[in-house]
Amino acid sequence: MYNRNWLAAAAAIGMAAGSAASAQVVSPPTILTINAEGRSLRTPDIAEVSGGVVTSAATASAAMADNARKMTAVVAAVRQAGLADRDIQT
Image (cartoon, rainbow, N blue to C red):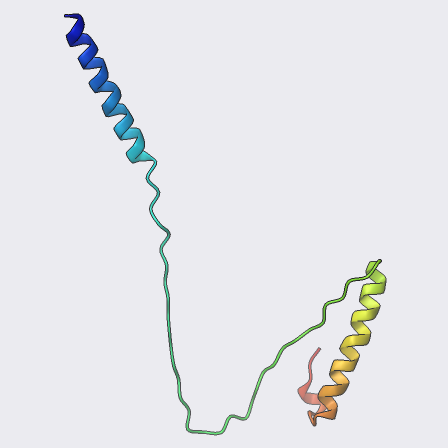
């Protein structure tokens, strides 16, 4: 009788461990990958370009002042390249 109880207990522990292990299985995340290609036979009339500057300084006000100086230089270079003021947004 003792051997049967021990065997039943061992089987119950094994089944419990098996169900706990299967409960911990994590499904991989769903991944969606899209590749696309487009072609146009017309000459484009609009181009959008964005950029910025990043500055580190001892104080926030010093960083903001340096950013303003650098961004002013960037806008000046864009104007010098021939873009009209109406085409520049900051």
